[in-house]
Length: 165
Image (cartoon, rainbow, N blue to C red; front, side):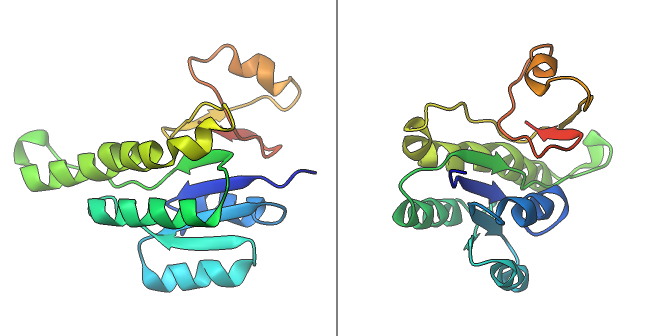
């Protein structure tokens, strides 16, 4: 089996953490964290994990993360952008600073890291898909066939009922 290189943001909890744990068993995983303590925990899980600090609300950390990843690998097979935040409440009562931060994290940060790594991804001639949800799949039908009925593509199949897009 050919070793692949994954970059996963939001790697310290939820789906991101689960993906890091599964994918790092046989692949190289660059795992994005925002909490120093959680970054240290990531590194202990596997020698195949390369933790990197990134806070999408601070653009300089995106540049530093991209520089680090590019210095450590020849290619990136898949970028999985899971990092995100939610600002909830009635729009008329939300602080514009909070709304801007949400856009910085959930939109602009994702675009910045994607643009920064595109040369490593282009060599693989693969589409870049960032997070946005999950697709329930029928395990009795071929995945490719099911994905054709959706407006998006999928890069990752963990042989589960979920494909990240």
